[in-house]
Length: 170
Image 1 (cartoon, rainbow, N blue to C red):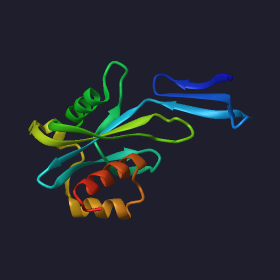
Image 2 (cartoon, one colour):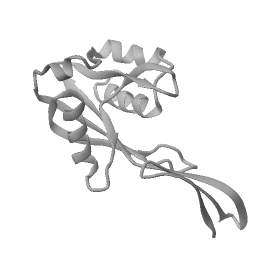
Image 3 (tube, rainbow, N blue to C red):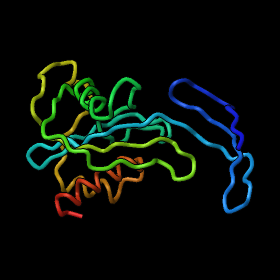
Image 4 (cartoon, rainbow, N blue to C red):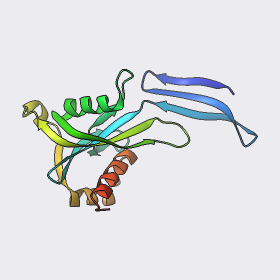
C-alpha cells in the first residue's frame, strides 16, 4: 500500500503514515515509528549487578538503567554492547550471552532491543569513570527496584526480570 515519511531525525527516528490491509479491511493513516535497534547488558559480579543512574527526559529525573546504546549500522548488536559497556563504564565482560531480542512495541515497530548477560572480566581503574553514577546492586535490591520503582523503562524491567528468573529469584 502507500507509505509517506512525515518526520525524520536521521538516523535515530523516522515517522511514516501508511495504509495497509488487514482482514480484507484497509487501515488508513496508520503511524509507523522507526527507531534504531538498541542493546543493553546485565553485568554480573559476585551476585551483584551493575546499574547506572542516568537522566531520562520522559521521567524528568535520574532513573535506574543498564549500560547500553543504539546499534550502529556498521556494528552487530554484540559488538555494539561491548563497545558501549567499555565506553560507559571502563568494564570488559566475559562469557557473553544473548538472552533475549524483543520488539519495543507490537504496533509501531519502534525497533528491537537485544538483552545480553556478561560477567565482569576487567575494569579500568580510571577517574574518568569514577564520576559516573555506577552502582553494584545485590539481588535483593534488584528485586525491590523491579517491584517498587515506577521510573523504569520496559527494556530495563525486562532485562532485570530475565536476570532474576535466571537466578531463580523471580
